[in-house]
Image 1 (cartoon, rainbow, N blue to C red):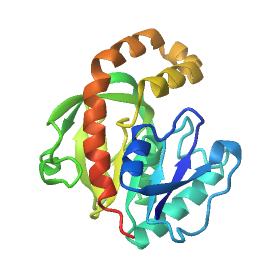
Image 2: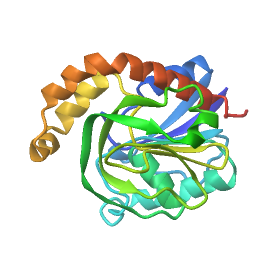
Image 3: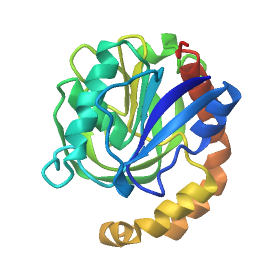
Length: 234
């Protein structure tokens, strides 16, 4: 059975609905939990793809989180081998950094439910061609990046110019969250309550709006993630 490597940086930031899509495609996962001290492999080995999940650290904090440098080296190997990559939130920032883009703090944090607009290039993209041109996405990030050189910008929001990009045919970075479920959002709100308080945001409001926006977001996520699994080769 095909296997993908999953790098997980926080206990609460799981695969979410990505896991359901992988199961339906008969793809297994090997999860590397950096928050629990798991080491990053030096090579992709027999894995057919790489998924990079979110987390509270910044790409530029490698002195504090030395495993981030190991992750970037693994991403570079996956890119060199042409293996499909899916980076979510921090994962998209790590992919952007591996491609030479500078990851930096944004002008303000983008946390909660905000519209995302697809670019013209997304209309012909393998993952986003069947996605509505604009939708309400779930966001939780303070860092941003320019679209890496040679990559194709796929989505933007009012606050953040590059919300999604593709490099080559099968490496994708999504700064927003398509994978979330109601329990996952609730756990993020609990885990990062201090960050919400510091930003003057209401976890209760985020959870309330989830009931309105999550059903459509889950449908979009199923479309995008199913298309990504089609990129995996035995």
